[in-house]
Length: 414
Image (cartoon, rainbow, N blue to C red; front, side, top):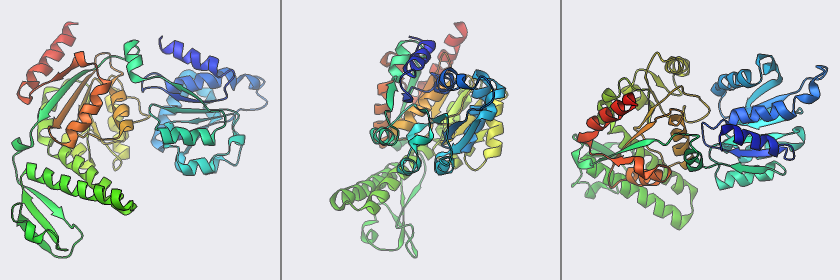
């Protein structure tokens, strides 16, 4: 099957099913598909022009409105823009005081329990939910909120095998914490009064004190301290079922990933020098890292400048942009070939969204540096399930430059 076949399948399904959850990988055309359903079934009764249809698009953030407007103009025409209204998931209740011919829930995995309480199914003639990834609990929530919701799913591997999306080349770059040069400080009791600075080996007499304790250590020792604390709070939550312990556990686990990402920054800079002429997006773990790795950065604190940087990238005026999570969903990237994962994330949704940013190029390349024996490696091993093993290479760092040159030369020759 191809893209057109899948769109026709949904249009055919919509003859008898008013409410459909469309779970397709990024790049297949979920937005276009939803607009084609509206064109086929929601506009024809209004040919006289006496009564105007009303469509609502629910989005996770307002910056996605411009992208949707471009889609509407492309597939329905500029004259149809006035029929559409937009609201975020956090403001869904504001739209439930009127009737809609069709409601589109874009990035439907953002549908929360609060949205379920606010949503009034009688206020919509038709509902379309779009998402690349929907967890089981969210799917159940949607089915409870939206009557007779029909589920249509296509897997990433399926559309790659059908050659709708390209199969990416993947470079896995194993790293060792032992090779990270520098002195690190791990802080225990960050909100404690006073401050004690101790060595890694000399920490034990002070470890249970309530003061802020700064432990001077190597990279390997710092990672070990993170793991000790993550496991402590994880076990405490499992034994007590206290959610404050769970929050502490998850917060420290996130901090550990961010720290692992931050100490890769010098390495990522060297990698990016080799990709100078390639269309590259670097996924970062923090705003600070996005700014360290590129002047054309996009994050939540520079929205106006970020929009300009994204525009410059899509127009081909710059070849490299850096971002945290703001480009994970709902944003189209023009010919982005290389994805460099400076920051790794345990979220399956985020992993698939980031993969989707790169698969719009005919010959994509993914570069995954990770520290062996850490949470990094666990995440990478899970990610490998989405990649073709024949196109996945484990490359020592010292050989990466040569492999990048070979990749670029092979593409030029083809």
